[in-house]
Image 1 (cartoon, rainbow, N blue to C red):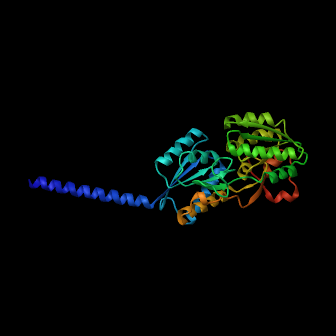
Image 2: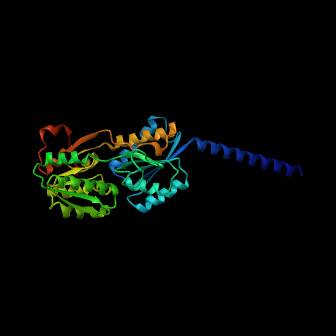
Image 3: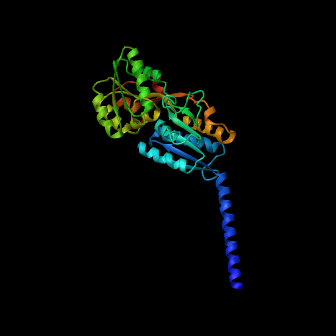
Length: 329
């Protein structure tokens, strides 16, 4: 009988310890902020935005492995994966989501109206139906826009290619941000009395044929901040260099990877800016509905000297200081 009582006592002690550790584990978990990061595809610009966001958190006391847990998920360019990842974040009840690029933001915003969502690399939050207005988002989404200085980028095109008569554009027609940029380019180009031509793709496998189909129809190409095109820049480079067609890009990483030039956004800085918005949510209790959409604070010239040499284009003296020499082969 004593043996039975002793066994019961041991079991009681074991259960008590188990409950104690469970409670302690729950308390520890509650001290750790879980942030889900959803990214449509990996390419240099979006990766830089993610790195900037994480660095902003770290610089303000929120560090992976200490007081935050980051669940980074890459959709590999597949919208079905975006839906699955979004479901995962909602099911796991993450404390915040960073959505990188328009399709990512649209996917997670369609799954929750309660989890705070900060998005970056989104060209137009209103057009993407993510917010009521840039000034007053009104829901659980806010963030930073990567809208380009398109008119100034086209000025750069004319400065580099003075004889341009026809401007070509390639973009993914399923990316709302790209559709918007193409429409703006068309309005500006035709408003200047130039001819506009375009070709669209739905995935990276179509990029080579698309570029080949348009290089003979234009004097220069404009490439928006399109995730499909950005991830296929080596392909764009190989075709355009052979055809000796200059490419003006939406952002600097596309130039580094084979484009000719841009006056564009620093995506690391944009991500860092988004990270500072996250600090306002985490530390100061702000809510996305009351946080206006922020715009890029500065733009930088980047000119690929190696590409210019390959297509036989001379860089004007006043732009020489912006030349980088990247070997894209």
